[in-house]
Length: 164
View 1 (cartoon, one colour):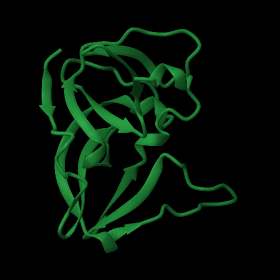
View 2 (view 1 turned 90 degrees about the vertical axis):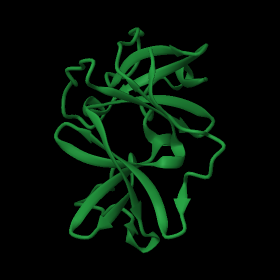
View 3 (view 1 turned 60 degrees about the horizontal axis):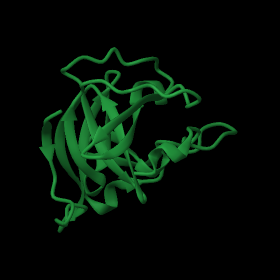
């Protein structure tokens, strides 16, 4: 597996002088954002080894330079069905607290700056609370961009597979 993009984990990539840097990515025809400071690498999809007794949204695991990384199908994680993965799909390797997780998405589309005052908590709709997977909504002009919380990607999965 060759890296499509490798980011320097020691560089200060979490924020710019004018706001939060986000990587925009596509999944299931929608655009989402992820904090750039959480992204360690972006790689081409090349498959994963399935594991028994994991949540349906966990595609399996990959060996990334000796570390076993769980791969989450983002479309399935959102309840939108399986991603029909092809070599054109990508896996974003994200730091999720002390662990790492791979996120299978359709494509990475942009790097954006979200001014600090443009980030709002997700709204509570109805009697339930907002999905904890969405950490914030970035208001970028007339565009609204849901921003994910990487540490919540494996909620509901067998978490010890992410011990990398």
